[in-house]
Structure formats: C-alpha cells, structure tokens
Image (cartoon, rainbow, N blue to C red; front, side):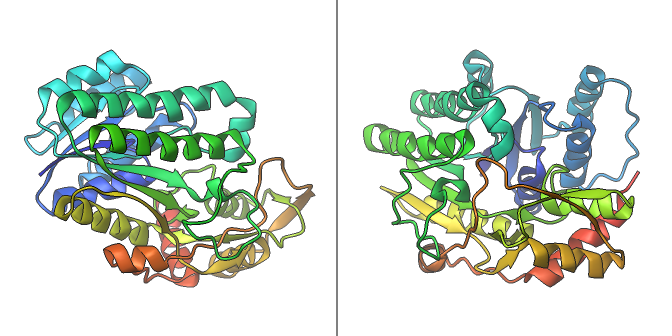
Length: 342
C-alpha cells in the first residue's frame, strides 16, 4: 500500500512512518518544517524514522532540508517540503502518486499559542485540511484518517470523556479548529463518500516528544537545575498516552478503514489512566533522581482542568488496547531524553 502522511517528520508522524515502512509499505511524507520549534529536531526525527544512523551535518535550514530530501529518497519513501496551505503545491504531489490512504497529522499545535495566533491556526488546521479533502475528492482517494484532539472536550464535566458527549463548547482556538475538522470531515464523507476516522489523541508522550510539551520541557529544566513554570495548584490532570499505544491505534484504524466501507467514526485514543500535574512532576523527579524547582504561576487561559478518555468504542471497533502505564512510559522517555541531549 502507498500511504501519504502529513506531518510525517513530527513526533507522532515519524513513529508512524517508521512502523509503516517496517511493515513493507510505501510512504509519502509531507512536512513544512514549521518554525514552531527547531527544524533540526524534525530532520533527526526523519532520519530516525528511516532507521538511519548517520551524523547529519547542519548548515542552514533550506540547504539542510534539500539535502535531507535527496539523501532519504527511495522507491519506498519520499519526503516533500510542503505546506498544506498551498493547494497547488499539494496538487502536484497528488498527481505524481497513486495514493491508497491519507493519514493527516500535520497541524499547528498547542492551546496557548493558538490564543495568540488564531488566524494562523484557522489557516493551517481548517483550510489546510480542506485542501487535502478537496484533492482526495479530485483524485478519487476514498480513505482518510485525521488527527483530532482531546481539546475538543473543553472543560467537560462528565468523566470520562466519550465520543457521544457534546463538544460544542471549546475553550481555545486550537480546540475549535479540531472540532471544525471533525464537522467538515463528515461533510466530505457524506457528499463524496470518503471513508474517514477522526482520532482524538489524549496527551501523547514518549521518545521524540516535542520540546514544548510538559514532560519534555520539565525533564530538560530539571536536568539543568532551572525553574519549572508550574501553572495552577498541581491538581490539573491529563490522560497521558504513550506513543507506541497511539501508533497501535492508528495502525488498527488504517486496517479498519481498508476492511470496511461507508465509514465515518470518531475515536478516543487515550490511556484511560489519569495523572495529575503533581504526580507527573514527582514521577519525573524520581526517575531523574533530581528535585524540581517550581515557579508557581496562575492557570493559563484555554487550559482544561482534566482529560480522561473513555476508550470503550476504540476497543470494540478496532481492537485498541493500550499497554504502557505512565511509570514505564516515562522511564522510556527519560532514557531517550538522556541519550539525545546535545
């Protein structure tokens, strides 16, 4: 099979591509190496996803990405330096390849930055996603997986969060764009018969985690004896999901789509294990064998108080079964983190 993965040089995307290639599939990776964080991280993710151990010599962004594209191109893998907001650029890629299924992971991420840049988030997460659906429509591609987010639940008072819950009250632009993607996705399913699964990811962590996310940020600051920005009283809680479990859920979603027709589903992919901010920090301190220095700060606008996934539907429909608890997952992250500090 030939899969197109958007955001394939990111945290989740690089792990997915690594698994798809190991299983003998062909992959087209579309990534724009956005300046949200250092592009060098995504270069390394790309090499890691191809199990390539070379020491990459960095010079400047444009030259480095050009070198990466040339170096990694093969009959099974091709990287495109492409922004999903550019429909004409995407169209050239779609014309060159006979794509069986699209896995759309690319997005502007993060709740707090979306409050500062709402129009950018709309342009990427809504219009960019619609560009992909338009090209699927025009190219006759009928299978599509889309990354949504637990953020759509907002401060839902019903615990755990179920796919049937009302999610009409997002509390950040990021969450609103993800909710919009679910609604518009149903339009393309209904009008153009594109089979689709929308996956609501719950706080994904593990090796290659983005540097702006809490576990990675905290680990770095603890290691450097710097203060940690600690928002709220420590009681906020997240349903942390290890990267291997998320990849398992995506792969099982792919198989379900390939085996079935007339599909439009929304699925929670979580660990179903809720960890408070205090507990997360304590776990990191124990594994790193170092004490954190907290800088107490008020809760931030747009942050939800708690996330907790009901994964009954994912278990039933695709056989999703997370296996990595938070303690073991954090140990694996810390091992990776300590081995990749520069």
